[in-house]
Length: 277
Image 1: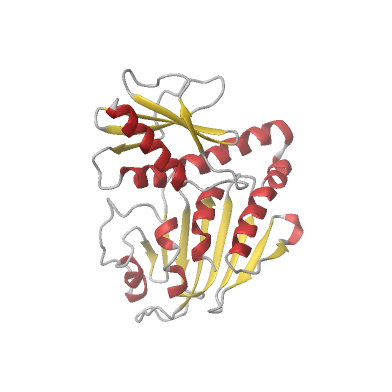
Image 2: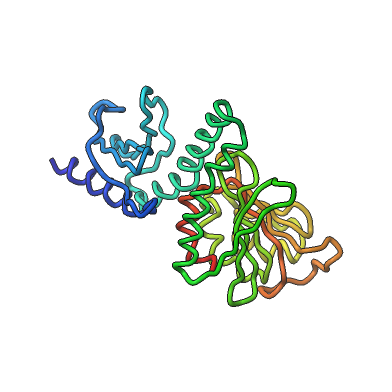
């Protein structure tokens, strides 16, 4: 009984860390079937998305619950004894599972209706993030890419930094761009970057790139002017100086930079909104 109660608490805490969509929070309930023998199992759902949370043998696993299929492999696995396993689960879900579900839905739409329909279907997600930005004091304006190759929102922060959020490709995910002082990225990078575990400091690159990679070891220097981040299944992006002829032997938080992050899930962006205004 204690294990079942503990697991139900884990599922509820996890659901509380995932953003409500269309103002509908994630709901916790019993799983309709077991994915592991003798594992404590719960189901959390939001709209047509559902995840199964199973805990046994000292690990907690997250499976996608899709109609007509039985999940074989977990999408996220964390140790139940980690300092904050619920936060680790939420991070994995926001960074990999939910963006992947958006991409899979987009792929199915392409096969059924063509890539243009994917761009149409992404509009509610963009609008939802836009309303969240307004709620936090931003003033986003709708913009259209030339030749019909995408659309998005643009807004300027009180510090003079310029952000844009785009529907650019029929991937089902969104693209975030930035131009402004380097310090304007420090609030959002901990949300967008993968966990720092497994990354180490490097002496590669320049004073400019080391200024960033010393602070965030997930950032890898591409050259003296640019760092990149991301791996397969996660968001990918870069931060660079605006021009290749700018000096790289000095660095400070006031340097003007440009940045882009792609393959962003709507849920992850909603958690990042407080850092984008």
